[in-house]
Length: 261
Ligand code: SF4
Ligand code: SF4
Image 1 (cartoon, rainbow, N blue to C red):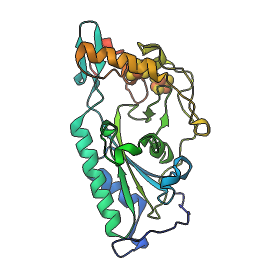
Image 2: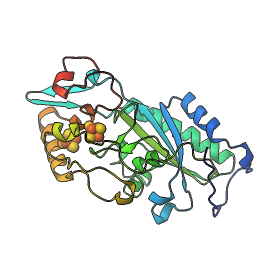
Image 3: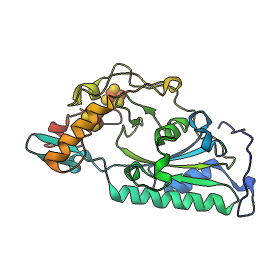
Image 4: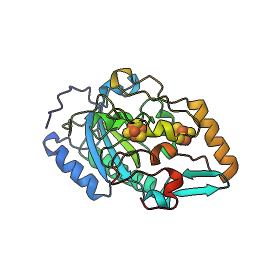
């Protein structure tokens, strides 16, 4: 395991600090025992806005989605996959609270960035999304890469996960090597499956993280069309089409409707 060796400007903390009590592997095991499917710890300094540089360790947490066949909504000619699961987000928030409480009780600063579905919440934390996306913590923690579809792709679950992040100044060890580039290689299934032609087919690399992988306007127009027809801003053909972490043949959303995951 790679030792995290940053030096920090510590901020006043509430509890007695005991850095020897912090063990990354133990913390990851605890997080998984609280219900996370995946958890990892990374050095996120490269992706941090100036506002966060004093809390440079990212704890990335993910919970897997239910089977695709249970999450398809269709009406008329529109078929979409919902990747919004309130029960999963509630679990992520609960896990984040436990992590924050655990770290603060040991004297470290800890700050939770809530799951993506809260991103329209006007609260302070939700306004931080543009400054620190969950994808950054997940790639730094070695839990996956950013796919051509612009989503975090994990080798075992593809893009069928919801994510949360806790930032901290606790001196935790990095749990895995970070992903520095995408592993999509010659695959273009999400590009071909996107009904809006919004995915540009660009391979992500961390050094050019600002390159737009999607035409956001085209994606938003497609979502708006779905909202009018089926009443929900959902689409996610690009999630279902992804073969990563799927056993056997990967089916399109249309085929998934009549098949199993
Ligand atoms: S959500 Fe739909 S429109 Fe947007 S990129 Fe994915 S497949 Fe394309
Ligand atoms: S469908 Fe293929 S190209 Fe798209 S994210 Fe998945 S692996 Fe990458």
